[in-house]
Length: 421
Ligand code: ACO
Image (cartoon, rainbow, N blue to C red; front, side):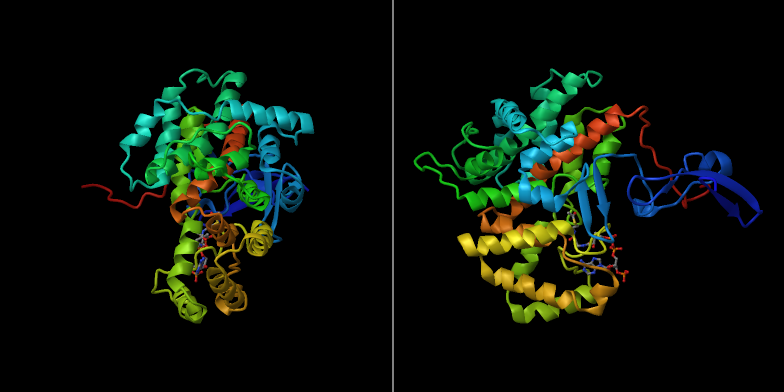
């Protein structure tokens, strides 16, 4: 049996043969790159729901079974046994680090975690009510101006340097944006602390205060970062790849990815979840909002529910739900919002509307509650998603960079405008 698919145009009976490639896991693909040449037609797939845009060896998702793996390692195993930095290394260097390598990797990032002092003028220029995602996006875009060396993308050592700088500096940019917004005195990275611990420290430190962080808080945030580390070709990652296909440098690509992540259908959703839970307010109001979510004439959607790929439980949501319960036991958490969230989950998982559409809680449904428990303000949530997702974006950028040939991403369209005026 040949590995091809024959398509017949029923208008004229003409047949076209297209090659099929098998994946190591998951669905095969039909190669339609010769489709236009053969048929004179484009393929139409709004939202790219059936289109694979690249070959990748980084992340595997089975949305029907609720499976997520990075380079073959299941996310549940990584969350149970590894740190965020292990996963960063796994994504960037294709393997989990040894204990010694993890230590040297941590050191490499620490050394790069400071930001150019000149960047403070940039932070100072933004109004206090600027959204931290806007400041973060501008800050990352500006890195190429403060660090103009190592911008040669044909030299691996140079683009890996850019990669390390971005991973190391983004938490500092986020913390600095937060401190400017609230008028807090500046905080520099604390090199005695681990990656995630240092980030929490930079948010919380105050000159007269000796910041003590509870291990469960650091573990919770580290897990949140890890669970966001990569998610194959989602909207922001596809944006990073599209911009990368023009040979733009990683600073430009990652800042474009941040823009794509901001929207409430993507990384802005966990902020939306908390806003929704606060608006609902009490358990007795849940039914009213479930009714609204099902009403096609009402734009309201249950934030934190549904996913383009997961048509079963999001495995990340399962890990976070466990962690959330651990946080309730160990540090106390606003249980009123949790009660509202639990009631929504209870009703939605049994309601025909959600069951028939395979709408399950996604990672954002629980991550917002965890971040809130850690004292992180709602408007910062998406910036923390960025800290988690950055290694994934960069790993995808590197993979694209190192593939045999790189084609600029240039989709086509079905033109339905005026013929002549
Ligand atoms: N509440 C109510 N109805 C929903 C929801 C929801 N949260 N999500 C999807 N639906 C309905 C749609 O109205 C549609 O119904 P229909 O078939 O009767 O028209 C059906 O389910 C399919 O929805 P689509 O929007 O076509 O699904 P798509 O795959 O394009 O969208 C998305 C996925 C954007 C995540 C969507 O489920 C959503 O808006 N969810 C809420 C926002 C959210 O939580 N985003 C976070 C995603 S995860 C992440 O980025 C980390």
